[in-house]
Image 1: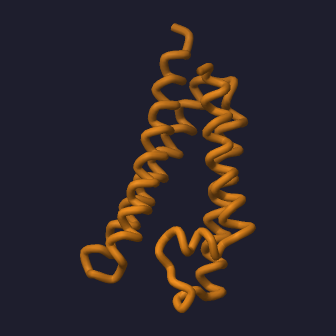
Image 2: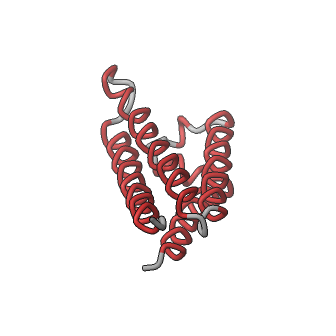
Length: 130
């Protein structure tokens, strides 16, 4: 897969997840283990913030797709964002304030996306002319 296609795939991931969160926040909340009785306008607001964040991160990747140096930096920023998301999902496990299965899903998804962005960063680095 070419570097541009890889960047395009990651754009689709970012914007797709962001669009889903923005257009159907209840679905995202359910995917993260939030039960209907726990759903609230505040949680839906935060789901929409997540949507905006994902869309912006995806657009940054797309804008950098033809500049391997810039793409590498943007991809590492995306990878780090996902690692921090995983840490944020894991933190409540220490206090027992989250459901383990919900945290596991969020952690697993974040680490998988982080690995994909790390792969994009490494591919971009290999594309930088000497």
